[in-house]
Amino acid sequence: MSETGSGSPAGAAPLPRDGGGERVVVGMSGGVDSSVAAWLLKQRGFEVIGLFMKNWEDDDGEHCPARQDLVDAASAADVIGVELEAVNFAAEYRERVFAEFLREYSAGRTPNPDVLCNAEIKFKAFLDHALSLGAQRIATGHYARLRRLDEPGGARHELLRGVDPDKDQSYFLHRLNQAQLARSMFPVGHLHKREVREIARRIGLPNAAKKDSTGICFIGERPFREFLNRYLPMRPGPIENEAGEAIGEHVGLAFYTLGQRKGLGVGGRRGGSGDAWFVARKDLDRNALVVVQGHDHPWLLSRALAAGQAHWIAGEAPLDDGRLGAKTRYRQRDARCALRVVSPSGFELAFDEPQWAVTPGQSAVLYRDEVCLGGGIIGG
Image (cartoon, rainbow, N blue to C red; front, side):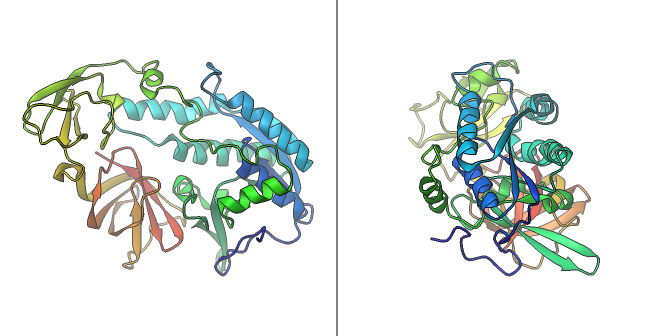
């Protein structure tokens, strides 16, 4: 087992052998990935400072694990032998991420706050704070990699997938820019998860077997509908089938997403096909939720999409060379597609094969082989 992993393409080398005392601030979440990232950097001779980010004012300790995460981060920092600072970015999070989260849900879309959190908090507010501490760079436990390309006009940085295909997080990092990537490091991007846990066990990290976090921290394990109802009013309306017949009642369009199967309350209806029901459309004008039966119903399949708020990591849109693929949701396999740029902030994708439940508000992220090119927010 190699602590630097394998399979790195040319230019995407693992960590340098000698950090030369360069100061790096590592975002330590209390999880095993960021803890091992901090240890790897210290082993390479970097001056490491750990930083725990509090991004949500914890109003319900039962559901938000921030307190325990801070304890875990401090325990790991103690084993590694680095200082840990706790910084509260809750005000920035509410202003830059949560406010947009609520606007999107109010408009009937399904946002991905993790994407915005990376661009606005972890690689902006956190980066600014790290620079104020005299750091040259920041590091996180994301499963992604960087490749520096030295060109006549200066260095350019590419964002690459993590080596572990099951843990690759480049999708959530696609809104980062060149300035942010130039100051960033992803020490575990060259490793598989099992290698990270093996390192953690070998060096005695107390969180070596800690379960991976899932979902959004400020929501935690609490029922999502209950949480969202604190901030958005419920506006009940009809649930309709594809023929326009009312077959039930929804609690508010904001509380459903395209492709949703559970929690509809319309199963086992007389005259139905017997297949499961799925959310296919939201009619905001009539406040109606349209559902269809069958996972592969035509209304759930799309051959094209339009996206806005385009962001390209290289600073300009990629050329369509016939090798582009896109994800319309995390963990989805790349889908071959053609790109048409319609404006500086908008593009369209045409897919070779129909895509299931393409959801407005989610991110469409483009790749060329292992390189993440950027993306945009799906419209509709």
